[in-house]
View 1 (spheres, one colour):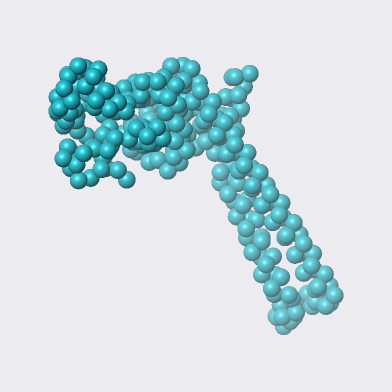
View 2: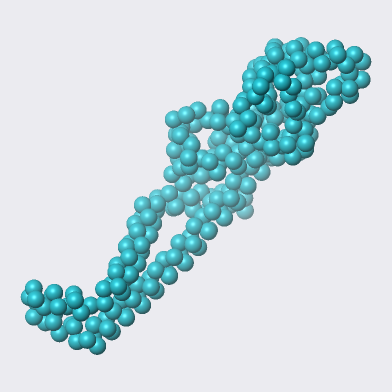
Length: 166
Length: 117
């Protein structure tokens, strides 16, 4: 069986052969689900977001240039969905100006740059993005508040890959 | 993970069924409306020309008779009929142009729901 490239699959979908969309779904669901699960602990929420990502991509597929790679575009949609998710649960974190500069940013991580963090840094940063306060994290890790702040600042600088808020 | 993929595809196909159904519904309404408009306008124009006896001019086709025929004809109604026919032919052209795509979509939807049954 000949494996089709993403470009060929998109071309077929644009031609009305929408059953080929299942190939894209099968190819990317795992990676996108794992990526979203790093940020959202609840399974149901993560699954909903994955579904929204693929639905948004399907709706935009007519405008999508099949010459461009699919993966970065999907992750762009993932970023937008995560922003909306956090906003809806009032978990958007206002980044302090002295930490990351003038522009308001929402930090998006992927698996590759989380690898640069230590286990503690990763756990603390994920708790921050799930909405835990610094005080709660300090209590949980039994460390002073200023220590937690320093760890978070260092971790963010290590993984910093900012996306401009549009 | 298979359950998640199945749910995603269920939603995608539901969206596509709604899209395709509304596509056909809206275009059918427009097509019928334009068809009726064309029929009504052409009937009215024919009646007007009959009453005026303008069709007699066409028995002897020469340039003068054609000019008189044109001057006697209801130009506004002819213009509207012309525009209606242009839209109608444009719709038919779009249907022919997208025929392959629509057919593929319908086949895909049929195959998807047949697998589920």
